[in-house]
Image (cartoon, rainbow, N blue to C red; front, side):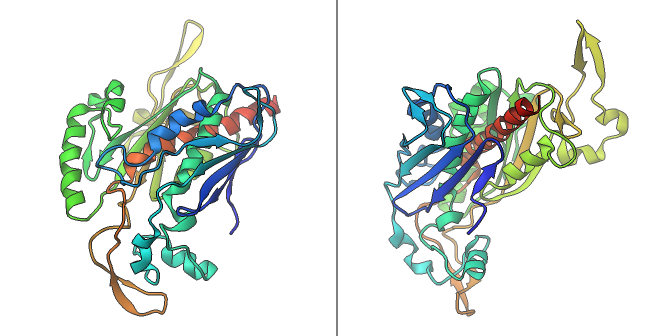
Length: 355
């Protein structure tokens, strides 16, 4: 299995399986003398870990990270940083009934066809368990970027229920289990997801991630565009089926004058009158907030019987037992933040190298 590494100058390689003993990653390209402790990483892992509410999988994992290398006396040395997290609550027996069946909508079939073998215990490498290491790498990326660049993610849609943009209150994000910027919408989502969960089904979501403080000049034409790398990063997250930057698909219905992010000079600085482009023009950051949005499909592992086939090519049905997120979009929020951080750290280092 190839392509387990993400990034260029700042890059990480993740390894391990959902129900293996440990998962881990090696982060390379980190400059020396950056203050870094396990606590700096843990604060972001705690946002992603399971069983924090009844709306996520009840798998009990502390996601406690351990730094094995690349840090000495509280500072990075410039050497590769190795991280591990022990899996503490595997219940592989939950997957015994599906070891010969393929879950529709899941990677089971394609993994088996490509490799001739698949780890049916939670999906192995195709499991969202791998994203814990993305979050860990993202925490290191934030340290590279420094405090002047901030990254915030939140859910803006669950199913067909959207948060009205005029209702955004970012102070609400950390006050509800959906990372939702509107308290009333979060309450509606809670009631809706309770019913979906009890019916043994699942639902999709849309997450928005915004980075502020990004200077002009990240990214390069033609094949190293910042938005292209962001789209690739977000698309690599489990269950993501669509990505847009700025207004994205909504820009298709705008006129040229409506879509134009008009500019003026104020106090000897460039001021944009709007941000339809999501902070990126020609693949290069404009200095405005970077805005990315991604759509997450409903969880494929559900307690509802659906038609499928087995590895012998016979028709059958499947119902997935075990502990699964009824809406994977909830825990995808910190993962989206992490991937934004990793891309920006990569482009930050490239911008410094070019200069």
